[in-house]
Image (cartoon, rainbow, N blue to C red; front, side, top):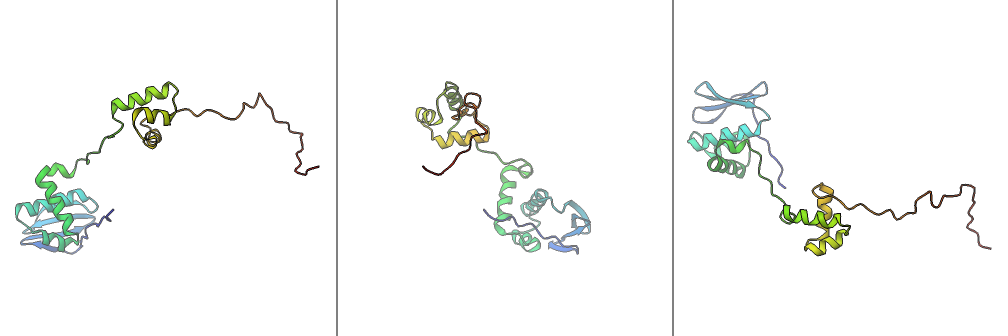
Length: 174
C-alpha cells in the first residue's frame, strides 16, 4: 500500500501560480489572491487542502505541476483528487468512501447459516451444505457478523471425577 505523503507548507509566502500565494500562519494554511485571503484550513486538514487545490486547477487558476512543485505532493495524487472533484463535486472530499458488503454472506445466506448452526450443525457441515468455505464462516464469526457455534466441553465435569490432592504420582517403573 502506498505511503501517505503530506503536503509541505512553508511559513514564508510561496507563490503557487499567477497572483496565488500560500502561507502557513499559526498552524493555519492561508491562500491569498492579490493580497486578499481567499481560503484557509488547518495544517493537518488534508481534505480541505485537496478540495481547494483541485478547485484551483479546475478553475484554471493553477496547473497540476504548480501544485506538485509548491507542496511537494505526487502528480498522481493531484490527478486523482482533481477527478474526485470533477466526478463527485466538493462533497466528494468530505464523504466517507463506500464499503463493500459481504459478497458471499448476504442477508439470505447469513440467515440460512445461522439457522443451521442453531440446529446444532458444525461449521464444516454448514459450509458444505451452503456451498461456502468454512474459513469464510469462521471469519464472519470472529468479526461478529455471525453467531458462533458453542464449543462442546470435552473435559469431564470436575464434580463427576474430583481430583485427589493427596495422591503422589511416580514415574518410576517397578
